[in-house]
Length: 270
Ligand code: MG
Ligand code: MG
Image (cartoon, rainbow, N blue to C red; front, side, top):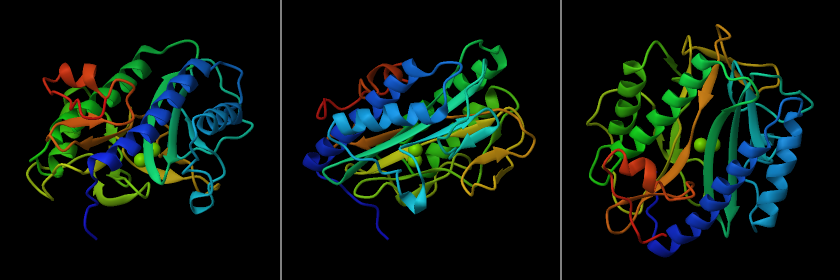
């Protein structure tokens, strides 16, 4: 299947969905507290998406029960919101999506509740920075595999981290998961050329130990085989018609973080 190419008008609707996702994640970031149940975070997200005129793309997705995924510690992704209580020092990974007028946004952050373990904080910082480097490497004219290459190179430069291999980023638009699949490792210079109108969700998932994972009996939660802590960051970005990137799920469109990587963002979607 071909990669979906969006018009500027369509990207503007995706920006509305993306901004709602970004704002919901910021609300969740400030809401995470020790002693809170993970389904309380889900309720906050559901209310905010509804208030913003969106609908959840996660709820009911292959039977998923929840508006967001909440994954703690050795759970890397796809944790189901439930009665589990967040404890002091927990890594809380929050994955959120929304649809507005048929167009999707998808993003994720990891935060630490309460007392911060410095090695966990570094894991989160490395994961987040690798996501930005992946987006920066996915400029107009680049080959798709340049993204995963940039993510892996950065993560490896920072220490012994495991990069999940069975999960990755994806095209996004009128569906949440579309072509192409975007792996978070590998050589540069392969795959389709990235061109204006494309939108991709970039989402490195890394651990402090092994890259190997398994799925819990709930059929969703992905945990590391060695119980090492994990992190997950995600943003949806596009290439605007002017050939410049714009991060649809970042409040500032990616301006600040991409500037630090000497990448100029498009002003067509602000
Ligand atoms: Mg996501
Ligand atoms: Mg995604």
